[in-house]
Length: 494
Image 1 (tube, rainbow, N blue to C red):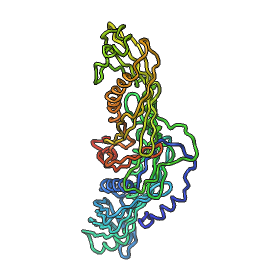
Image 2: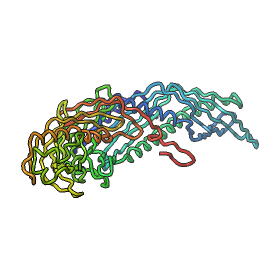
Image 3: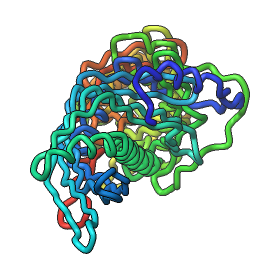
Image 4: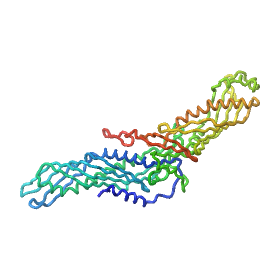
């Protein structure tokens, strides 16, 4: 017998008896699917299951029965096909190690062929016809667990079943005396065969979902330098009304294979318990995520730039400095100047309640274009502090910054002392009108959030807490063929 919807509380209770592993590794990104998100996923899966479940062929049934006056009669039900089904209600519940999805079907329709034959002396008598079956009150339930397996998700079916309340069989053709005999003999067999066929079909669908989850990418490329490691860390955490997935989240070189990291085990501070919110999804990113990508760019030598144009271009000519740094103008009269900007350490990002800050230490080398040659004449150490705000565009997390303050010291000079006020003015112009817009041009592009392909973030809201940035959002399903491959001419389109 299958699993009726009324057994849903029992399935959840059985899952609660299974204790999760006490060991836990430290993730840098946590994604919490709330009850509304679980309902969204459930509706998506149930709707797809209802569409793909029919037409469903059920194995033929054959039975021999002894009937007074007729002897042994061979009876068969063949070509049994489940056609339309209508889902009236579905639910999803969370246990300690997985989820339970149950659905009630208002009705289902089946068609089949029937036949019988028996021997009377030397003559074989047979008859056949067709039949229609109306199913009233069908319930389907499946209990699934999820585990972390080498950085990927492993989905397993713990229990799956189908329960049919009533069958109304209408036989057409043949002798009417046979009708009730057939119904009495085959009603329970048809019921169990259909229940088993539906259970096998749902289990087969769950295996396809397991394959899909197991083949999720383990890294998301940002560009030719950096990629986000999106291998899963720890088993999913199942709560009363939410499921949390923990992800490595740090950036790695694009040419490096993403593997689960060796992390410290022990107690772990999970994402804030926001699953009760009406938003479907909460994504918590540790500030280490942002610092890991800045460290990669620094290591790759990308945090440096040669500047030969600024809004007040006259400042990049020695003529503007003739009265303030006479020695510079005497050595290089009316020569153009360059600024070589290089980070001397990776930018540091700090996230606090309601605020995102970053600092970067730069070497600014002033050079002269003298007869086509670049001649360094002075170098300053500049410490820049910015504050910013994050924003979601599409499935990317981006943002912008503005200048808070900066300080500088002269490291060396071949043209004497520099005028502090003038240098400060030039640096402020450069930082405010060139450095910050240049940084923002990259920040606006952002980097991809760990969202499964085919889904799109909508109505996102961002908040910050100590060392974490949290994205609260709903999602929509925009590419059904991504999650549910379409088969055409013997091949799958993915």
